[in-house]
Image (cartoon, rainbow, N blue to C red; front, side, top):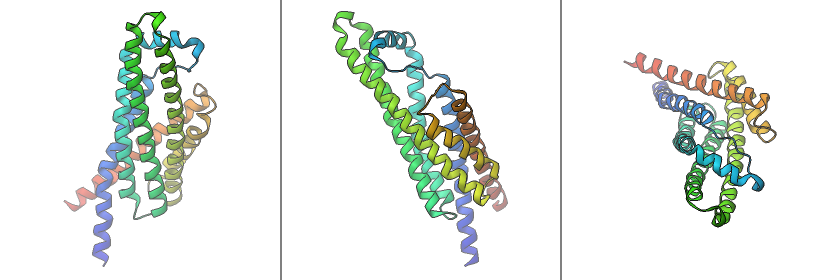
Length: 233
């Protein structure tokens, strides 16, 4: 019986290697998406200027959309990795965190699809005379509003996920507890202050804590799994 428990524990520790790698990749693509982000507040009075701005930065918009498409798939996989790694230690926290993380990935998947639709409309807008482009601008405005709404929903889900994982780490010491507290603080800012102001210093600090906690989280998971693998060898 004891041997079976050890094997089960080590099996989950080995699963921490891909989970850690995915978490690190997610943090990399989050940074890439932040760097390539085009900040636009949807407003019908400025829609022509916004579409022209997007047209001038179409390559950047395309790169940002691909970053989120890749990241959405990675986030969904991260949810599965969290579930496999943490399930033996806390069923409720594991299922809830995995569900919220994967849901975040699904929201970002719709976000990226919306981005590709917006890219198509911007291309059409650039080719269409101003007199005939009113229908396109109306549709583009709807896409921009939907894109902003999806982003806020994703921020909320990601923040709540970070709080749940953070409290698990801080409470159990499964990983260094300071990672848990960083995740909790960054998650709270993500889940709440994103709805107030995305340009504020508070949100920027919270986002930094969120990304750092994600990098450290993935690094420690990768390290734990690697150590077990070396011991078994």
